[in-house]
Length: 378
Image 1 (cartoon, one colour):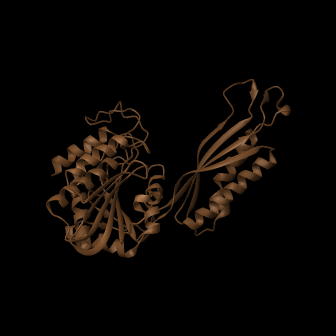
Image 2 (cartoon, rainbow, N blue to C red):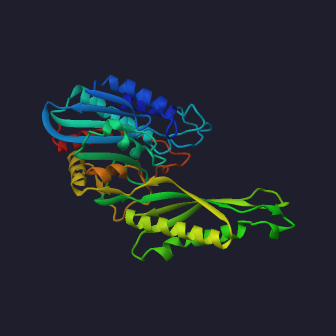
Image 3 (cartoon, rainbow, N blue to C red):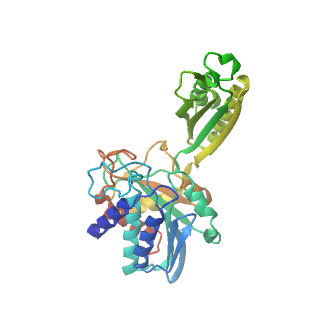
C-alpha cells in the first residue's frame, strides 16, 4: 500500500495548483475515490472541494476528516525532485499532497473493510492557504443539512520525530488576519514637495505604530503580534514626490477575542495617522484565519488512537503561532487539529527544499483507521 500511496502522492505533487483553482487536482481525486466505491461523492464544494461519504449499517457518530487541495505560489522548476510540479507557478511545499494521499489510503482501506456503524465524510478542501476554503465549504448548500459529531484534520510537522502525534486541548493554532492599508495623497514635483501631499512620513510613522501595536493595545498576559510584511511608497523616480503608498501587515493572536482588539486598534492607528497627514485611507482585511480550538473529548479520541498504535505523543505547552482555517470547522463542530511529526531535521514548511516524506504515509493512514476504531465506527 505504501508504494501505491507514494505514486499517488507524487502524482498529486506534480499537479500542484494554488488556492481556488485546484480543478485538475480535484478531478484526479474524484477518479481515485470512485474506485474506492463511497456511498456518495460530491464535487464543486465551496469552489473546487471534493466530498466523499461512507455509511455503516448501524447508527453511530458522524465524523469528518479533512485534507487540503491547494499548493503554494512557489516556483519548483529548478528543483531536483523527480516528481517536481509540472507548472512553475505552484508547489506543494506545505505537504497537502501528502495529506490528500493519506486520506486516499484510508478510502482504499474502507473499500475492503467497510464501516460497521456511523458515517465518515472525507473532505478535500480548497483554498486553505488563503483562509477562504473552510468558510466557503461550510457555507456551501451541500453541507447545509449535514451535522458532524466530530471533525478532525492532521498536518505534518517538521521539527518533530517521524510519526509523533502532536496535540493539545484548547487553542492549537493561532488566529491571524492580513491587513492592507492604502494611503492616497497627491504627488508633486520633487522640487516642490509643499505643493503635494506625500504619504512618506505617514508610512514611517505607521510602521512604528503598527510594530508596537501588541505592546500598547493588549495586556501583558495576551499573546499578540503584528508583523509588517510589505511597504511601498510611490515609484523609483527622483523627480516626483509620491502621492500614494501601501502597507501590509499580519496580525496574530492565540485568542479570537484578542484579535478583535488588535484589529480595532490597527484601524484606529491607521485612521489617526492618515488624518494627521491629510491623506485618504482605505483598508482591506484579507486571509482571515480564526483560532483553531480543540475539544478535549476529540483530543482524547486522537490520544486513544495513537496509543493503540504505539505512537509517541507530544503535548505542546503553548499554541502554534501559525494559523489554519480548520478553525472554521472547530468553531461549529467539536473536533481537533493535530500534528504528525515529519522528522526532526526535515526542511520546514514553505521552505524551497521541503517535500512531504513518503515514509509518513503509512502511519498517517494507520492513525485515521485507529481514530475510526476509537470512535467505534470500525
